[in-house]
Length: 103
Image (cartoon, rainbow, N blue to C red):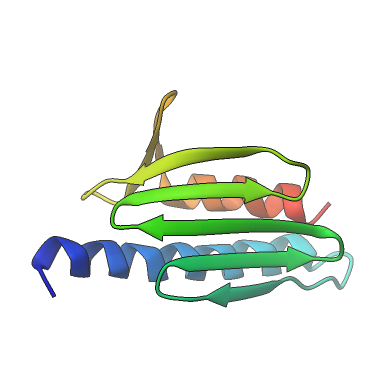
């Protein structure tokens, strides 16, 4: 596996781990849990009727929400997520998604 492909795979696994951690934290008060399913090119997070679906092709990530919202992101080599609005730390994006999902 080329070096950059390995890097994006490791960042992908890290993103799934962040989503697991942040959904667990946001669910503590109400004793709620989310499921996080990790595949080589897909991460799916579910809580009750809410869900987030992430699909990766190399560095490119397409996300889709249960309410119809969707978008495209790009994993950067320094572990951030880039969108048309700019770059965001991966942990900040994961925390934001987790907060929305666990409402």
